[in-house]
Length: 245
Ligand code: 5GP
Image 1 (cartoon, helix red, strand yellow):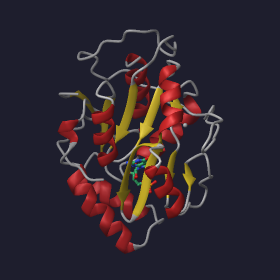
Image 2: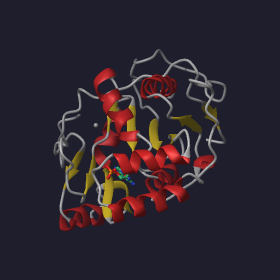
Image 3: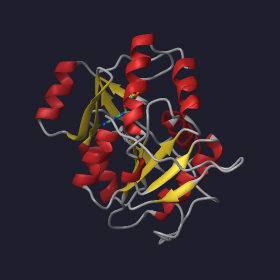
C-alpha cells in the first residue's frame, strides 16, 4: 500500500471534491452483518464527470458499480466509514480480512475479519480475495464473493482499502469509482496518526513513510475529497455512491 498526491486545496470551511481522470451480509467465509452500515454525499461534490443516473438509494436490478475509498493511513477513512455505516445503512460496506490485531473497540466481523497469517495466505491462494496487500507489517484483503454478490444484486457497494488495493480493483473492475480522501494538510495527518495513540512509535513512522507515497497517487483517482469535516465528506460520499449506480 502506497501512493501519493495532489491535494485539492481545501476551501474555507468546505471539503473539496475534485473529479480527475477516474460490509453486512450474513455470508461466508466471514459473515458479518452490516445492515447497519452506510453514508451520504451531497453539496460540494462535482457531478460533472458522471451525472447521477439513478434515484439515490434505489438498487438496480442488474448490477451496480463499485465505489472504492482510499487515502493515506490516518486520514480518517475508517471514521468516515463508521459514520456511513450508521447513517446510510443502504450502502453495503465490505469487511476486509486482516492479520492485524484488533484495536480496542473493534469487533470481529464488523471492522474486520481478524485472521491469522495461515488463514490469510490460504484465502489469497484459493482466490478468495478480490485484492490484497501488505500494509505496515500486516496483511489486508477484500473477500471476493460478498462484493461480487452485492454488485450483482445492484446494491450500493463500498470498499475502504489502501492504495495498492485500489489499484488492483481498478485493474480487475475498471468501471469502479475510485475516491481519494486527502488530509487538509501534512501536519494534520501527522497529528492524527500520532494522536490516535493506538500504534507504537515505530509503526507510526512506517505509516507516515507510506503516507508520503500514498499522497502522491491522488491523481490516479476519479475524485478527491479533502477531509475537513467528516459529516461533509460523508455527505459527498453518499452523493457519489448513489450517482455511481
Ligand atoms: P488499519 O490498520 O488502520 O485499519 O488499516 C491500514 C490500511 O489498510 C488502511 O489504509 C486501510 O484502508 C487499508 N485496508 C483496510 N482493509 C483493506 C483491504 O481489504 N485491502 C487493502 N488493500 N487495504 C485495506
